[in-house]
Amino acid sequence: KQEVTQIPAALSVPEGENLVLNCSFTDSAIYNLQWFRQDPGKGLTSLLLIQSSQREQTSGRLNASLDKSSGRSTLYIAASQPGDSATYLCAVRPNGSARQLTFGSGTQLTVLP
Amino acid sequence: GAVVSQHPSWVICKSGTSVKIECRSLDFQATTMFWYRQFPKQSLMLMATSNEGSKATYEQGVEKDKFLINHASLTLSTLTVTSAHPEDSSFYICSASGQGAQYFGPGTRLTVL
Image 1 (cartoon, each protein chain N blue to C red):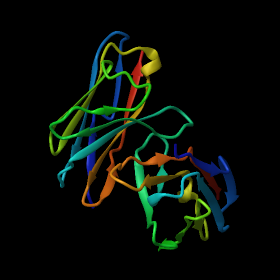
Image 2: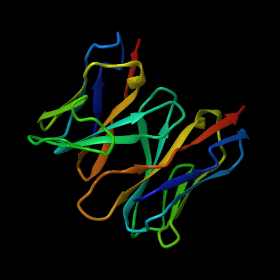
Image 3: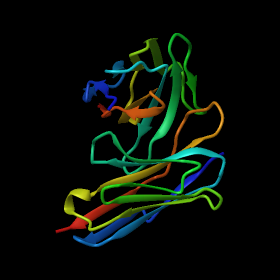
């Protein structure tokens, strides 16, 4: 059974810092990996999706990497802003016909002004 | 991008009553919809997967007679929490699969008194 772990569970940084969020998964047979943002009491906003054949994806100040063989992904946030404060979730989709995403428990990020 | 809506966004009910939550894909057809539950400070846990016109597939530990799922059309799925109890209080999020990706609704906050 796939397990997804995110470290740290919570992170607080001053505005302007670059930071890295970590995600690891136990089964490397994945179809893709996705990073989401969740604001308190809200649904999920997709940030980046990396296919299993890709190594990284970039969107603005965000960069996500994927090392499938080692079961790891990182989300790099450059020049953090208070508006980046949220919970960040990573999720993996398995190979095969199943489409269910398995989510990590998230990293709660607070960017202090 | 594709939009998934949920209604209501929040609901408060008395113990023993039933609550229906709607999930709609607004601008695409979703052959598969997923229902997740999220308790405070925890990640999303998949409850069930529903395909249009067929019975839902429930995850282990989820009572199918308590959480009734109907996926009557390619744009609508409903989750009915029957005889709700305080322990059913949670954040329920639906997701629709379409256009090669999975899109999430904004969630429904259920509070059972």
